[in-house]
Image 1 (cartoon, rainbow, N blue to C red):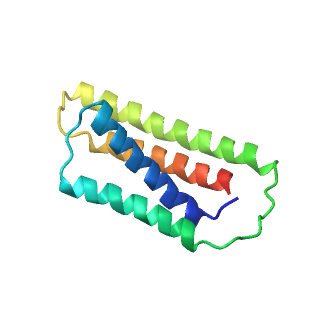
Image 2 (tube, rainbow, N blue to C red):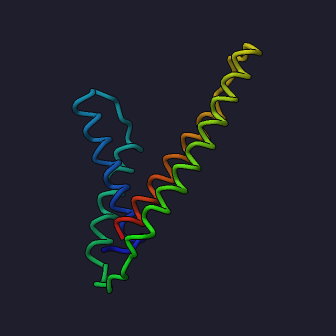
Length: 122
């Protein structure tokens, strides 16, 4: 029942915890800038928690969630269709260039999922 302004920094801290896990478990190397980013994410999350104020919960209709899931599913079908068309064109033309379009589509999909998680958790 937290506002999105609180949920997003906490999810950022989750990525920082994932970085720490990958450093110790997967033995990935991190430089000083990475460690500073992890520290800032942790301190920022603590600051948001300490400075936050209690808010009233706004009711969310249970009937809106199926519509949200339906719209997200349609967007994913469109994005993945675009990705398949792009891959087929690239295979036909034998292009082995950068996969910027794929990265953009995956970024859009992950952004949609993060946004949906924020909405549902609110």
